[in-house]
Length: 172
Image 1 (cartoon, rainbow, N blue to C red):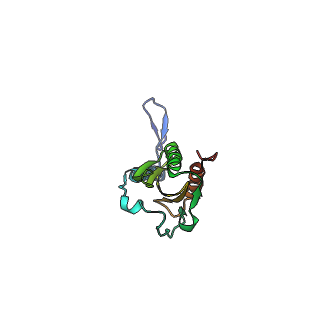
Image 2: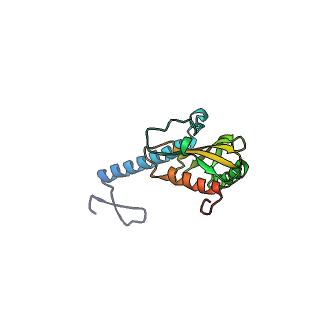
Image 3: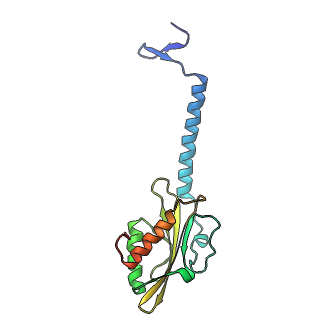
């Protein structure tokens, strides 16, 4: 029998794994372990409520492009009372799996956490509802905790939630 061939339990030939192949397998195993560790960290890392529950009306925009902010003079006026807007926002938040981090829509100021489907990256959505007679002014700030770019996810979410708050089709 050739020296590079050994017999497995069934007596058939089985090639030995070369050193370079063994190193490659160790590298792949290490990458798998690191990916799992990162996923666990992202899901279990503590959230500092004071850092993420911020008023979109007064917040200073981040220096990274992984956010969407519609507030201040650019805030959206919705032709509905605050209670109706809050109900619509609650519906879309539940539909998207958002959970309340702090505040409440009933108080007019809330921050939600929404996690990405695959890795569970957290995004934070802060909303301030300001009643103005029969209308409501809505300030909204959506941002990612991790990464530099969000590939437009927060902008799309803000427009989807604004559409839902208005009671228009396509919001949910």
